[in-house]
Image (cartoon, rainbow, N blue to C red; front, side, top):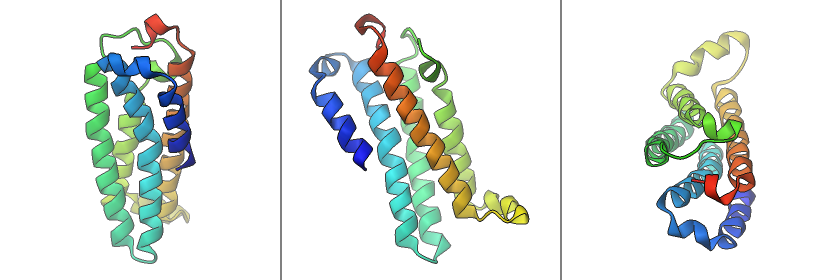
Length: 148
């Protein structure tokens, strides 16, 4: 959740983002790429030994992530996508899809090689956070005209 707080500080210093709907949406997408993994991880801790609770938290979180990311891609499809992370934002949907599949039980395959389902989901969360960092970097290092 520290990343969420740091992102709030960045957004607070860039009030001009709120004047452009696409930029505001992208900033919200970065925010969610930090918030949702944190909430899903907290849901996993709350679940304890119960697989049901962490799977529910991951299913809801990934479903919301897929929905919002599709909205983000639709609102910003006309923008100039410079930077490797901004050009490949579709990867966020793919990772949320893998999380969703795992949360409904398709991660059992990994138990055959000794990897627990929650470990698989944690790996996907790490990738989401990494992509969030990349999106933030691409977003913050673009000239103002190319940010949307």
